[in-house]
Length: 226
Ligand code: CA
Image (tube, rainbow, N blue to C red; front, side):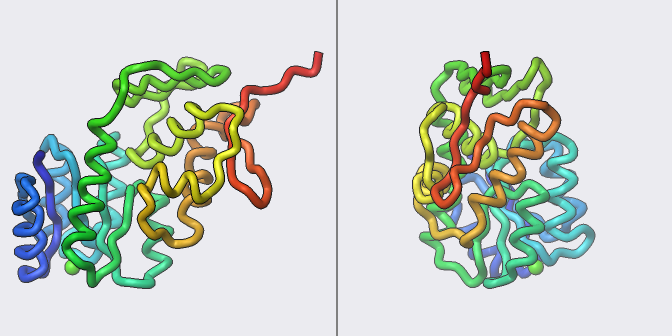
């Protein structure tokens, strides 16, 4: 699998590259945001590991522009520890996961594998909830015949909710299944639900994603009155 690593500090870049190569990944490297955007738009990468502070364009801008261009490659963003503002902003712009700096290599490898495994491990079937249609083979989502573009994490969350229609999923279960138990900032699940709602529910009258207060979330077809 081909991975794009975007990091302008040579020592970190070299170490990340070596770590990923030792894990069997084929790594391409750049330290410039503009070049990263070009490469991300044109290359068939299985994963992009993206630093935030970069010359040219910063990591947030690179992420935003890739998502605007409908590039759905999983993006793992490297952030300074405890920079909550960066985390929330990055989520809004379509990053899939965060790796706080400084990090241990096993954690980088584990997160990289988790993000890319999710892309491969799909069974080809179609899940329908009301007018929502999820093609789990192609990872395509439509609602009322309109195509909806999701990031890899948003997709994984939506597929989990839809595959468990009518069941309440706690935040812990969602964290375990979508993030494979990695420690998250406390509001990450809620932030992703908010973004899913924006894309999947906000444009439509009928809201499929329901909050179960104090517990978690569920997806339900509308209950008819008659
Ligand atoms: Ca940097």
